[in-house]
Length: 115
View 1 (cartoon, rainbow, N blue to C red):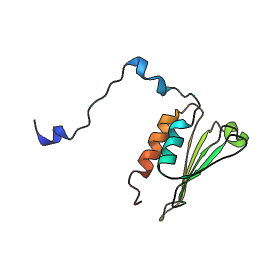
View 2: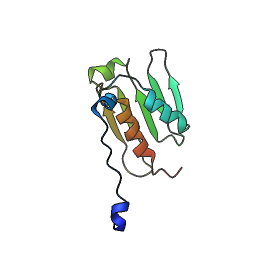
View 3: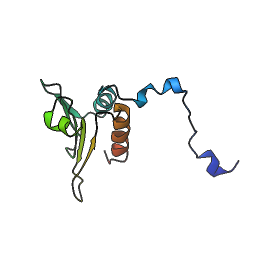
View 4: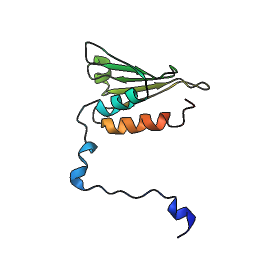
């Protein structure tokens, strides 16, 4: 076996019954657990929306299930990033995007953060 083959990730093929997470259940838990573990400031509103900010203040994540403006655009997750250099950008996820996919996006986003 050569060295490059040992560095390849294992291929995981979950059984069909193990893929329940591929459809959205409209639950924010996977993202919120990640944000709490990262020590982000997380605030929930009386309307059941959730707003989170990274410790350095450069990233905002909103879970907006009760925001009429977001719902009219089929948005339930909004990620806003203000890099230290360059232009700000936004990524939005629709109501059918599983929270696990959003958590994966957020984990990748912060994976190489200097903090």
